Amino acid sequence: MSVERQVVRALGSISGATLLSRILGFVRDMVVALVFGAGPVTDAFFVAFRIPNMLRRLLAEGALSTAVVPVFSEYVETRSRDELITMLRAVLGAAILALGLTTIVGIAGAPWILRVIAPGFSDDPVQADLAVLLTRVMFPYLPLVGLAALAMGVLQIHGRFFAASIGPALLNVGMIAGVVLFARHLQPPILALAIGVLIGGVAQLVVQIPSLVRCQLLVGPAHDLCHPALGRVTRLLLPAVFGLAAVQVSVFVNTLLASLLPPGSISFLYYADRVMEFPLGVFGIALASASLPTMARQAAQGDHRGLAATLNFSLRLGFYVAVPATVGLVMLRTPITRVLFERGQFTATDTVATAQALLWYAVGLAGFSGARIVAQAFYAIGAASTAVKLGILSVAVNVAAALMLMAPLAHGGLALASSIGAYANLVFLVIIARRRFGALGVRSIAWSLGRTATASLALAAWCALLLRLWPPAATRSVEAAWLAGAIAGGALAFWLASGALAASERNALAAMLPSRRSR
Image (cartoon, rainbow, N blue to C red; front, side, top):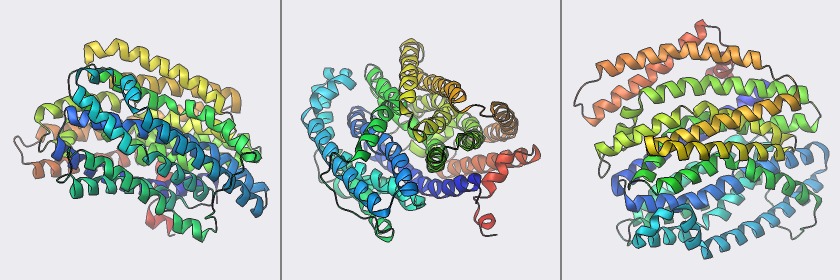
């Protein structure tokens, strides 16, 4: 099987699992918007949830899985099975210790953490106390999802991508179940959402156990802090935390600054970010995850030319989806927000404010996706320290842009600043990648991007037509049907246009379709 087919096959599995997760995520957000609306209470929850969630992305699903995959891959390729099992037990024991200590410190230090990331809450002691309570309830989610991330890394190396990626969908199931089962019985009711997070964390870990058993890799922890693999994982983990922190620090900065804006600003940014993360997660981050095992294997074999080719293919494929997704989100931002969230306590005014944030988040979609893909190449070769320096530079760009844009554009300026930071990160990474790996085929990427942008004009024309014909004062079900038609028709228009332009990325994606894979 060719390298490109390996990446696409893995992408199909991860994207399918992620798509389910994102759909359930929207159901979750609709439930939250219906029951709690957008205001001080939801602001408190979203701030509290971002603390363990940010640590999850940095220490668990992000940096931890990124750090262990190259090490796991090297052991699978060059060591005996006994050595692999010994290494896994040592890494598991160290992870339990580190995640447990982090959770204890986080619970104890919750009030001080909240003062740093949401200083605006100090004006409302009730809101501040609620945020502290929710933070403490949800912090045990970190060790649960951290162990799930380790299991995910093991399963991905053994080609079991779907089982490793389905866990996040269960977080959304847990949160929905928490609201449905407990909101009426708890005071304040928002506590039900925090309990749902813990339910989802348990499910994320448990769901991977059957696959680990089938791979004969379900092992217990060992207290072996001197194992040589731990040193390698640590050397990759520490810089990877900072390298992958670029996007998360942007979220942190937005939260801090949004807490100084009118009430609801944090929630507007959250809901808009959730919409933007649908295509980013289903394809951009999924593609980055799918390409990492292949690039790690190429790095272990010393095949840097092959690694550069894999990176070129992954970038072209990522932009092929990110560009039309950006066009669709920008043009349909208001009906998307209205159909998804405008019900119950979520008003038409909230829709307008959330759509404004979505506009500026959407323009950065290609930057977020591309930066994540290129960063994987550095992690694959164990050069995560390079990503650290570039991540710090991009964070500085984001902070500077946020400070300049929040006054004229309010919360929309904070979303735009995140997009600017993402593109800065992508540019920095590509420049250094060319020096490290040699030719990346930038010209072929540029030609591909041009074809994709041209094909996206067909999508834009379709969306513009539908918006002109949009029925006034339509019911929510009618508007949902029109929105579905706009999205489906736009996707078809882009698909046909890119086919007419002979886009090779179109053929690669077609291989993911069941009818094509069965041939």
